[in-house]
Image 1: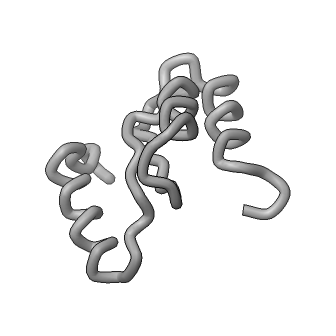
Image 2: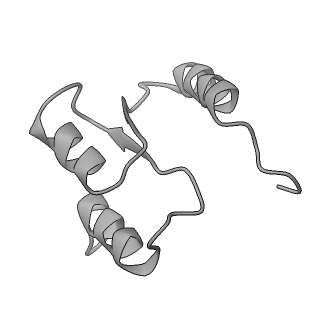
Image 3: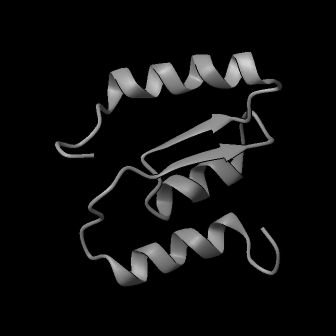
Length: 74
């Protein structure tokens, strides 16, 4: 994202939504570490490693749908 980081976005969400009405998932280039902890501390519901290709992204997306089904009307 130009000019802002994912952490900036998480901080913005936290500042604008006292109770976040949506699921926040962070896709990171790193598999573990303090960035994951920071993202969760800033309100991310889940942190996952960015998939390397479209097929892996589809698998990850399908798993998320099982965990967090779409909202009614969405």
